[in-house]
Image 1 (cartoon, rainbow, N blue to C red):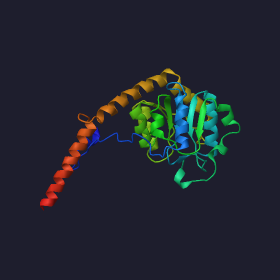
Image 2: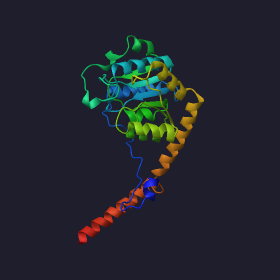
Image 3: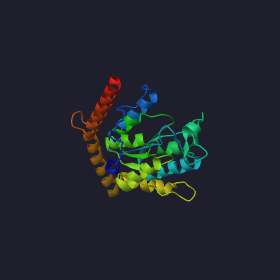
Image 4: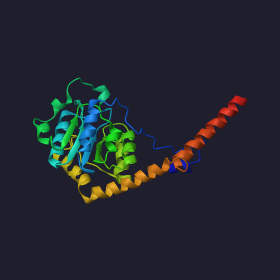
Length: 255
């Protein structure tokens, strides 16, 4: 935005946001209540939330390595799982399956991790999950809505971009804002279980992760300031834009 503002242009730019929902759209079904009740029982900032958004799926190999990496890390986790695609970075809407996602997990995984993990084979109330006191990290595809939701509640990220603008968002989070950690990807395009475990421990246990959390808390404060009712920069920009539209409409009416 700063770079665009410096350019000589006939266009005006208005920095509005972050704009996100305060609650995920839902019908307060059993799965939502189950996951929130489970989170209520977990220690403060101890749970890694794992989700690839409404449009992301993994290959079977990627699911296997992610599952085993979660187990190897020993960390608590809440994972929203979908049936695999034929690609390590595919869109769910193009690869919908009616099969039970849980059957694609490694043999014995659910039993071995039942004391520390919860796997949801469908949708989850992401906004409520991220804002829960027990959630301390987010393994995310880095879709922009998910990034904003994480920033607004101060939760640092493990980046796992799949397609579209997500890779660019991941670079911003890791190299620019330094509020996220990036796993190394193998030559076959798969993140191996040891690497999964390594980045999870980095985010959830180590000093590097604590520093990311502190920077994300700072971003959270900036985001809150931006949307303050009277003095926020976003509120001011939106007011300016509305006034411009109103004036433009008045000119058209007079003509």
